[in-house]
Amino acid sequence: MSAYFKIVDGCYVGNSWAASPWLPTQLGGHGVCGILARELETHSPGKDFIPARMTVDLLKPVLNEPVVVQSSIVRDGRRVRVVDASIVQHGVVRVRATAMFLAISQQPPGAVWQAAHQFPAPTHRLDAPGGDGLLFKSGDADWSEDFVAGQNDERKYSWQNVWPLVEGEQITPFQRAAFVADTSNMVCNWGTEGIGYINTDMTMTLSRLPVGPELGLLAQDQVAAAGISVGTATMYDRLGPLGTCVLTGLSNAQHQIDMPTWIAHFAEA
Image (cartoon, rainbow, N blue to C red; front, side, top):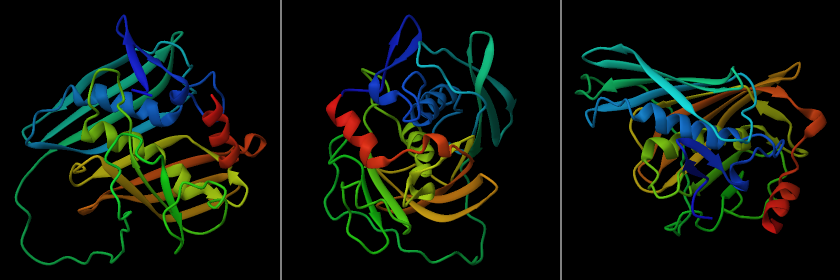
């Protein structure tokens, strides 16, 4: 696979890997967040700003058909720029997103408490897009590609080198981060029977952009009641933590995703 999308007549057209694991007639949130980040990034004020927050409201499923992304600047200040983007299909707003670009500046003086966490990374590098596939670990186990071994209730980590988002383009650090952020569902909501929550939103916060092609997620927390879950993950690279991802999910128990079965299906495709 060379990329998740190609651009045809100004529209994004996804391949089979861009499809939703819930229903192939829809696009997966990972790719949707990626192309929204690509559009929002076109309004970046420049290298002296960081896309410090991106929030995506997944109002309705995005249909697996040609997609157009619309965007506009809603605030443009000396230190803050806010950009909105949306995907409209058949006259209906399917997804809306906001990015807040903040100016880089000097750190204030003084020491501040920070949580101490270990951020494990595989000893070998995933130098090629797709690398060894999506690597993950559960609890104290080693990094693995074996999705059968991941069907448990232990704390999850993931590690990946994302394929290019758009055919003929290199994926940017911001696009990579947005794509990976949506996959926090896998580290936060993957349990003994698979994944039973579907994302209704995604908020990613970044203190810096990722460095290098590899990006990891560490599940920090998951709370759930009455069919609603809130998952929180830390995003990190080989230099350490760089931001957080928060997802709100709705129960989709009737269409629970059994990860080994899903991966096997795509391996045969």
